[in-house]
Image 1 (tube, rainbow, N blue to C red):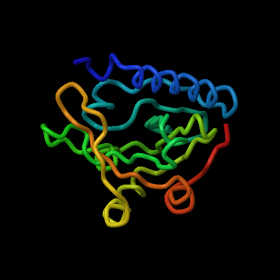
Image 2 (image 1 turned 180 degrees about the horizontal axis):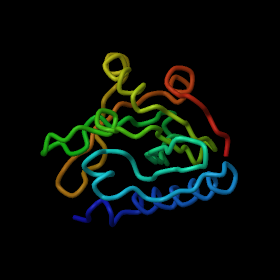
Image 3 (image 1 turned 90 degrees about the vertical axis):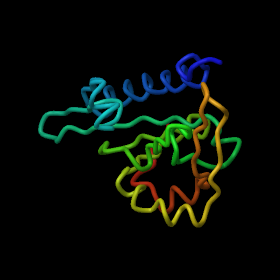
Image 4 (image 1 turned 45 degrees about the vertical axis):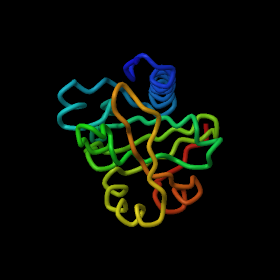
Length: 161
């Protein structure tokens, strides 16, 4: 079985990161550099550091959901690796911001991971938790939250793209 880094979904997500970083650099004036492996994997600080003179550096986590147009939901990962008992990013992220892209919906949802984490137990009572496809020997799980609910109740800002 292929590892997650050898899938079209992974490639699509990485392509989204390039587009987002170009947009935020060109139109919003941020300089962007990748986080270190330690910052990303151990400290859970996200994928990139956005810097701008006179503004505090932002640690940014990128997410891309290519199924949202079809399903009408966003996927909030609660379990990253089931057989290793590894919690999902909704619990572990210490990034300042999550840029949750809905490319086919032409939107980027700007979210606070701390706010999402604070809402997770309430969301678990309201929405279904489902597995994703089987990865290389493990399953990822997450909550399906309707896009409109997320925009109204969980999102700091919506950027139309």
